[in-house]
Length: 253
Image (cartoon, rainbow, N blue to C red; front, top):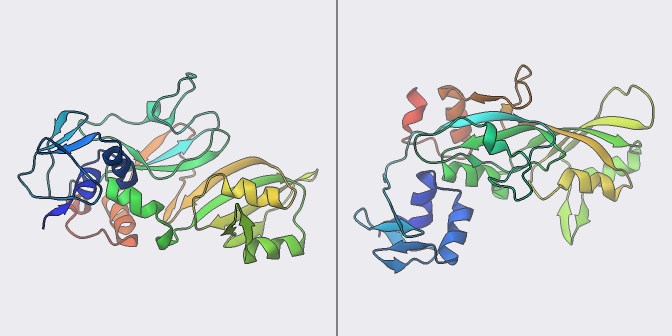
């Protein structure tokens, strides 16, 4: 039966599975000269093209590369910005083939840990809600949560008709004044979710930093704008967390 087209292209590092599915829906991908459709399976000798350009794809899993990036405030997470603002992709190491795929995003005013990989399938699984992968943030908010509000945020509230909640909330030592610091954990990556949860309690977030994504921590000695390649054992742990550990040649490096 062959393998699904979007999985092959994602594994080759062309983009995440979600991105490639959109390309297929937009008519940007052809197989054997005909428009592809989402879910189509292809054989090893199928001729694949994206935007009219032939794509050479290795059906075996390519070596998985992963880097950690310390995003500073003021950078955006798109590849190109019409307004000329700096993007995170300008500060990543060059690749001889494939491209860096972001595992989720941070808004322009949020700093901290970003993960990039050359494996689109890995990126897609790390972002998929069914795995419930934790994201931990350091938050500075105007005001203090009451015990009742904390319980509400743990039990869950509705955001746009969908449930949202923190898995954990821990108050940090405060230096006084109106602001309070918290460490929070969520298991989804919805748009501005941390800010919106605090906003639902009438509190505005004025500083937000991601400290952890799943098993990966932001290294304390990694400066803003800096990146670090993940070692083989750490890549193994990451792949294993989403059941992609089999047959990956990066694991023995």
